[in-house]
Amino acid sequence: LVGFNFDIKIFALPLIGLGMFLRLTKGNGRSGALGETFAGFGVFFLGIDLLRATFAETGINLPLTLLGGGVGSHFTFLVLGVLLTVAMQSSSAAIAITLTATAGGFIPFDGGASLVIGANIGSTSTAALAALGATPNAKRVATAHVIFNLATGVVALLLLPFLLHALTIFPQLLHVQSNATMLLALFHTVFNILGVCLMWPFTQFMVTHLMGWFRSHEEDEAQPLYLDKNIAAPPVLAFHALAKEIERIGNIARRMAKGAMSSEAGPSLQLDADRRTLLKLEIEVGNFINLIRRGNLPEELDHVLPNALRVTSYYREVADVSLRIAQMQQQSRLLANTALAQEIGLYKQHVVKLLDLTDVAREEYAPEECAALFKETEEMYRHLKSSLLKAGTKSLLPVGLMVSLIDLMSDVRRIADQIEKGGRYLTTLTTAMPTEDKAIPVQAAA
Image 1 (tube, helix red, strand yellow):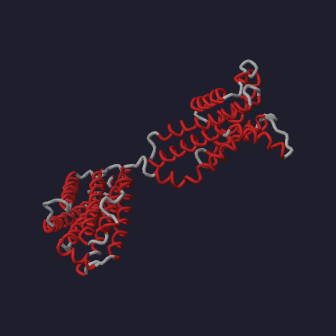
Image 2 (tube, rainbow, N blue to C red):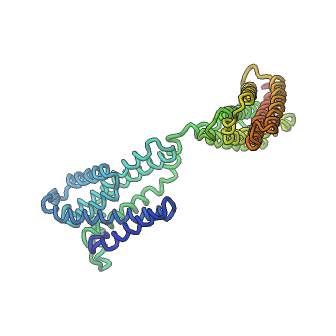
Image 3 (cartoon, rainbow, N blue to C red):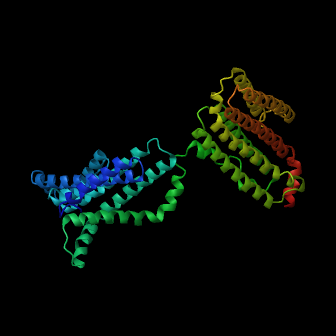
């Protein structure tokens, strides 16, 4: 309603001036952003004033009031509102045009109400375009916005005669003077309140269903594949499921370690996503272990169950160290000593080989082979550390770079240690697992 009864330039122009002054003097800080907001509001209000003046002059030449007030007329204005918002990609600007057109006599009051409904429905196009290529949560929010506006628009259109009648008599009850522009602005407010009242009871239902849409790879991977409360009681099924899920966590940890050691540009978004997935699965494993303990667990298995948490902690440590390695990887690029660079490369290749061998899902997995390979890794680490120290003392390597590389190689060794232990302890879950014949009496006794 601002700008229809007084000269909006009185405060719009100062807003623009103040805003640009803050933007130019304060740069990209908070004050600069606030100034940009002030300037934007000033330009927006000036645009409203320009629209008001324009439609005041053209309303006689384009008398859409002749369309009448039938169903066809309402549908026409509804479509115009949708097209106007789609073209301008701003429902606020479309509603501002509607208000100014109504004030200039360009469209009737009931036609303006239909235009407002169309503008709100048209705003779904803005949300849909903004959601293209966005995150799953952004797409879900955009979908909720579309559902909200479409449902509210349909209901408001069906109730339009009753709403307009109520809006007409409401100012009379308050003994307040009104005009078509004021009533149209009030209708827009009522439209949004109607939408909230309509959709509020279905909020949880919408959230539940929308969470199943637009799922990302990270969200899918973070969901347990083998854990289910219905199989927590039978020891055979529970231990099989637990081992399989921990194997998945181990695969994610190995993927992170390989990605970190091959990265030269710092931590990637994939590493951060993998770590979040791993942590979520670790929590699910802990909850499943609590369910197992509540059941009738045989004594010979009770002492093995803590190894599951031990293994997940090893894999979590691999994930944390991998992020740290990715942050330090750029130090390797600063190494000009070719012999040391080759030795570091061979050391990393050795650890990658160990990562592959510690996958317990492999038929050829052998804990003894992994333990022997880890001993070789330790020997390589000690020799490499000695070489780095010698290079530092002989000024062949800057001391700061030497310290950073030693820390980096120590973290790589830490990954080898944790991944070897994880595989070794994970096998205790499968080897201690009862056979079907032994498990049946336990369940019968339960």
